[in-house]
Amino acid sequence: MAQKQQFYQEEEPPQVEDKPPSPWENVPMEQWRDWRWQLAHRLRTVEDFARVIHLTPEEVEGLSAPGHFHVEVTPYFASLMDPDDPHCPIRRQVVPTSQELVPFDAAMADSLNEDAHSPVPGLVHRYPDRVLMLTTTVCASYCRFCTRSRLVGTTRQQFNSEIYEQQIAYIAAHPEIRDVLLSGGDVLLLSATVLENLLQRLRAIPHVEVIRLGTRVPVFLPQRITPELVAMLSRYHPLWMNIHFNHPKEITPEVERALALLANAGIPLGSQSVLLAGINDCPNVIKALVHKLVRNRVRPYYLYQCDLVPGAGHFRTPVAKGIEIMESLRGHTSGYAIPTYVIDAPAGGGKIPILPNYLISMSERNVVVRNYEGFITTYAQPEQYTSHDPKTCPYCQARAAQGPQEGVAGLLAGYARTIAPQGWEDAHHREPAALPELVEEY
Image (cartoon, rainbow, N blue to C red):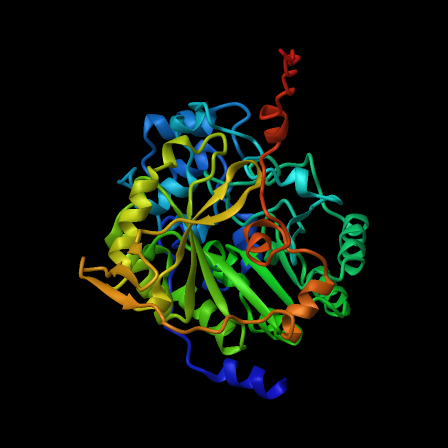
């Protein structure tokens, strides 16, 4: 471990600006590069933002509205905003406007129905083999389209050691859980002591194979990614990190330095983006983003359709825009630079991939497909094929021992013949009519 730490500390990091931009030009660099200073000096009020950008009436109204979703922006991230452009993609993500106050019919506070999938506080068990473990309600800055705006940035719900104990006990008691995602809020804002304790506890559970961290700290607060933090994280491999990037302007020299520290420590990095109107709803913006990500060893993972949360209506795009973006990526850039476009289905349906249609038709003999250029060709089906036999496959037998598979996979595996929506049988139930008596005639 000491050798690995020496390796990623010695690599020459990207050059970082020596002076913070105005209005922080008199702040010593030692303070500017201190993540604790950044958190302590976050922008919150109309007066704070007025010293940095030329506020529009819509922004003043959004910042002044009573009961608005929490606002805090690190000086570092605020320094990336264009002070004269209210359409700046950095600025629009974190500065509220009056549009945030406009309701829309489909909005739901808990649009992903996470609370209904929480067997213990803060633990979401939506998928069979993995759980989401919420660890804090605090973020370095607050995205205006936040999926968990009902929870984060508020004192109504706090996480503590008692809740962590319940979460870990549940994970330990369910051997089907092999993958744990720590998120929040932002997990990297936990103290190093608390975070390491959680990682130690999870690593001690034999059936937990993979630990993931979901974070936006490298974007909002790259100063937090220190050699000491990275050295601690690297003790708990296999550990993965998903980072939330939305626009290529977010990837600054400071962020590149943070990503290099993480990648050099052997932490696989992925990116989750949200498709946002007026920010990245452009095929060329997304292409520039994914290219910049892979140059920094970050694998584009998901492109999310914006969730149906209150206050985010003005960020939503038609699904057709996402399909257009995916058409512009497949075949036009490397496969590992292409995220999966998903709708995180309302009411707890989970992530559903949405793709352009490349399969045109098929018969017993041929499959007809088209490529990104519109070139149509056929793939010949095999004339002889001996199907895989699950009865002789040790992997299939091991899976069967765990119990029947659910969903479409369960139908394909033969565990069930149908999937019926709730109430389907009642809707189609008919009382049999009595047959008339037959009268025999002689």
